[in-house]
Image 1 (cartoon, rainbow, N blue to C red):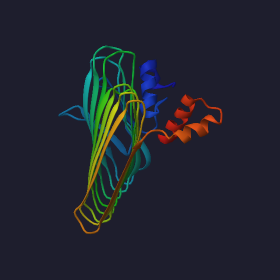
Image 2 (image 1 turned 60 degrees about the vertical axis):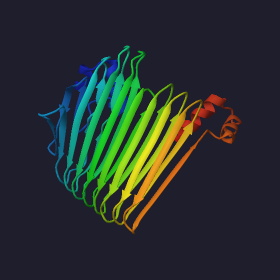
Image 3 (image 1 turned 45 degrees about the horizontal axis):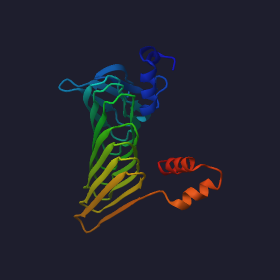
Image 4 (image 1 turned 45 degrees about the vertical axis):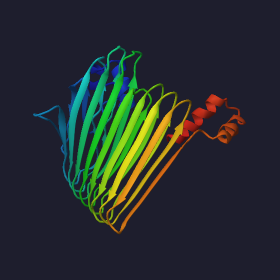
Length: 313
C-alpha cells in the first residue's frame, strides 16, 4: 500500500481495512473511510457524490442515473477501546445505474472496555438500478473487552431494480444483531447470501423481514453458518408475499462442540399467486466426510477445517 491511505494508517488499521473491504491501496472510484467516529479519507467522482449529513452522523451517497461499472467503498474501523460509534448511511442509486458498493466494519479491541459500532444503511434503488452490495464484519484484539457490531440494512427496490447482498462475519465478534428489511417492487429482485461463524461464547442474531409487494417480485435468502464452542446463533426470517411473487429462504447450519442454533423461517402468502418456500437444516459434520478426508492423509482437525471452508464458500 503506497499512496495517500498508507501515509495515514498504521499496521493495525491497514489489516482491518483489508479484512473488511479488501483495501490494500487507495481504491479506484468513490470512497469514504471512517475511523473511531471520524472520516479520515474521502473521494468522489463525476457520477458518485458523497455528502456528510448535517443532522446526524453519517453520509449520503448519491449515484447518478446510468452510472455503470463504478464502485463505492465505505468501510468503518474502530481501534479505540471503550468507543461506541453510530452512523447512518443513505444510498440513492439512480435509474439504470449498475454499481458495486463495499461496506463493512472492523474492530480491533485490546482493552477491557467494550467497543461497539451500529451502522444503519438505507438503500433507495430507482427503476432499473442494479447493485452488488458486499458487507463484511471482523473483530480482533487480545483484550477482554467485547467487540459488538449491530448492522441494519433497509432496502427500497423500485420496479425492475435488483440488489445482490453478500454478508460475511467470521469469528471475532462478541455479539451481533443483524437486521435486514426490504420493500420489493414490480419485477424487482433481492438476493442475500449470508455466511457466519461464531466461537467461544459469542452470540449472533440475523433477522430478515421482506415484503414482496410488486408483481413478479422475488427474494432469495441463503444463510450458512457454523456455531462452535459455546456460541449461540439465531436465524429469523419473515417473508410476506403480497402479490404474484416468488420467495425462497434457506438456512443451513453446522453445530460443533456445545454450540447452539435456532432457526425460525416464516413465510406468509397474502396473494393467490404468491409462491414461497422455506428450508432449514441444522446438524453436525458428517462422520463419513471426516473419514473420507482422513483416508487422504489429513488429520481430524485438518479435515474439519477443509469441510468448514468448503461449507462457508
